[in-house]
View 1 (cartoon, rainbow, N blue to C red):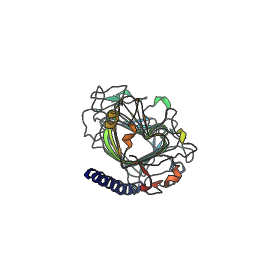
View 2 (tube, helix red, strand yellow; view 1 turned 180 degrees about the vertical axis):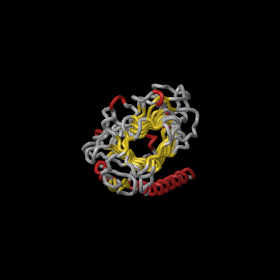
View 3 (cartoon, one colour; view 1 turned 120 degrees about the vertical axis):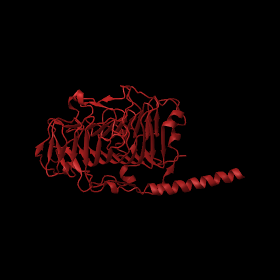
View 4 (spheres, one colour; view 1 turned 90 degrees about the vertical axis):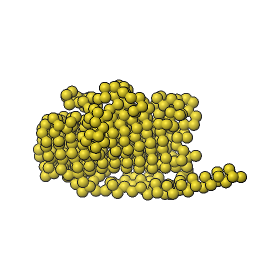
Length: 424
């Protein structure tokens, strides 16, 4: 009798817990997006560039917001110089000689915009003619911890070798401050520019500040982080062709308030993920097997704008490989085939349960939920326990309040969270 009472009480308490937190969960607001984001960058008329930045910035340099700058080709910040960009500054980025801003190890980029006056890196094409991959991206090399055999790494692509090294033994270093920054139409694939993602961080330490950053229409990854450790907040990836977040080489951190908006027809031939996380780089190996990439995502909205006419073109929201560890909390995942797929490094259910955790979250998918390489994979769906989900796939417009709004898309659920199933 006592056991039955205990189980009944536990069930009631669990239901109350889930209900309370489900209601709180769906009240997540997106006030942090107001003022500085732009979900229609191709309609924005930016002023023409007036001054071209030099190829080498070897002295401390200050960019003013009363000048529009042109970034052309590879521009290196070197010799421990600090490049500071005033709030409201616009940098037009060359598409004919595809631009990359490369902050070399020991140097710094201080780009502190504001909600009223964000800093904008954008294509130098005119409005309505811009396209993904018009220019390269921003690459920042730090001296933080990188889990490779050498403890260092080398940025790929046609980058001057003396400026391509990153990583070191300074986990608390500060290489950059990025606040209220928009990066539009990056990801140029010409000339083997493998690291020409929207924002690439290499070995960046914990004192660096990255918050309120938006990458739109990247032809490669929106964000690519290799090694380092940092807590990041308020970041947006909008309609990238490749992955929204590609993370490897032992990066560790907490990422709070992220919005990923994908489209099923905008993807790479090999498949693209909202989050592609790898414990280490297979090409360079690792120094410490226990020091793999380990990230917590909180308040994440990962949405593919799919419906029943095109959902078959989507992949899993998350791809985990090489023993990476990931925790998803208080988040929404919708429009993908599955929540997560694991590669062969996750060789048993026990390994998967240790590496992946998800709670107080919601998902709307059209597959089984989890894809795993090990067979038989009995019990693998248990990692999604205690999260709410739609019983059958629901179109994006039916599910969310206003997911295609031109100002700020709204991903609050039309129905109360308590109307959805709970994975038991």
